[in-house]
Amino acid sequence: MSQVIEVKIPDIGDFKDLPVVEVLVKVGDIVSVEQSLITLESDKATIEVPSSASGVVKNLMLKVGDNVSEGTLILSLEESCDSIVPAAVSSPSISAQDSFGVSSSNTSTKVPVTSERKESLTISHAGPSVRKFARELGVDVGCIEGSGRKGRITFDDVRTFVKNILSGNNALGAVSGSPTGAGVGDLNLLPWPKVDFAKFGPVELKDISRIKKISGANLHRNWVMVPHVTNNDEADITELEAFRINLNKENEKSGTKVTMLAFVMKACVMALKRHVTFNASFDGDNLVLKKYFHIGFAADTLNGLMVPIVRDVDKKGVFEIARETGELARLARDGKLKPDQMQGGCFSISSLGGIGGTTFTPIINVPEVAILGLSRSSLKPTWDNQKQQFVPRLILPLSLSYDHRVIDGAEAARFNSYLGELLQDFRRVIL
Ligand code: CAO
Image 1 (tube, protein in one colour):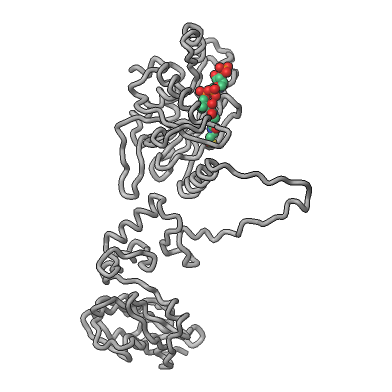
Image 2 (tube, protein in one colour):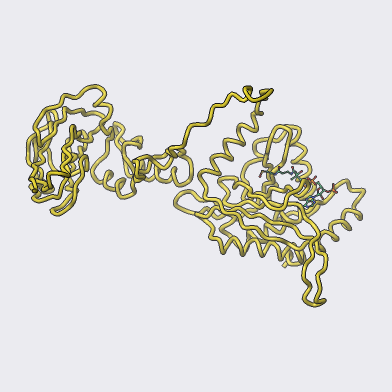
């Protein structure tokens, strides 16, 4: 058996004859309890009126431009008895300056507003068109701070809010739409386990350095907010390594030792020039393509990880780059790096080659969009087609992590493979 329920304008305080500025449902729509039906506008605020019951819209009594007061019939719903869920309380969503008594229109029982209930009302202050815009983007206007007159939310506030979320500036941004109604920033994770380790054996507490705390917080944000993918490839550096060893012998007295890192930096500039989206930052709307080539490198220090930047690598020779990385690494280890020596990077390299490992997943150094990890080179048997036999070749593993919002997998594979070609025949870097 079906039942018809009338949904009326609830108690809206002292307001009378408010114009309907939006009708959010139509005949035949299935409506749930608390779903917004219409938007009213007073001179101070907009008010979304929610449904007090669930069902299918049978008759819609209002249209945009109609004036309404408490008790005006909005629509009638048809519902079978077993699925009727009358709302105990359905509160209009109102502006910060207004608060209402609320009522369940199908029982016409007035429910006084308690202080807790006032707090649970959606507090926001935005015009209907701004609300509509926010709704289209899946944004809850209640999460936005208005910059307009008397805190009114503007179109730009909505845009800035979305931009901040997309660019990762708002760790707890609330875009609605998850099944629980939780925002994207609300990961709904279990709390960190609290364990008394001393119960299991002797322990010692050690302070974490300030640098580790800062870099740790950055790494955590970057890992959580950027969709990382790592492309692993290999470069045959047999000839390049022989060249490097010779160069170092010839220049023994200069005091500058060239490591593989300097060659890789130079080759990366060529790859960045060919694949321009790697030399970019994502600001939420646009890619900012950089025309300069400042390369950062991860330096392991006693106090934690630091990323000094070598500027204008495109304009420098391998010796100059090697001298500068050595000097910057020394400053980092002595705790003497200046802030501007760690700012403005385009792309980073994390080299663990001097230590070991075969591959790893470097974490992107936001706002950059990619980072290259170098592991330890080793001799590997490689098939030589001409000689028709395996020959020992020195192979350098390349692990390229990229922001998948900006870079596709195919593009990353091309970048990494091109980098491998450049390192295999370094003459290509001057082409
Ligand atoms: N394969 C094999 N050997 C390598 C190599 C590689 N890929 N890269 C460097 N080496 C060798 C060097 O040739 C050098 O050998 P010799 O002592 O025989 O000359 C030795 O390893 C040590 O090199 P280095 O570390 O002093 O110099 P570098 O230019 O390669 O690196 C720096 C400089 C500052 C990047 C490095 O010292 C460092 O701190 N690395 C750690 C970075 C890090 O922690 N990354 C992880 C960050 S979290 O993602």
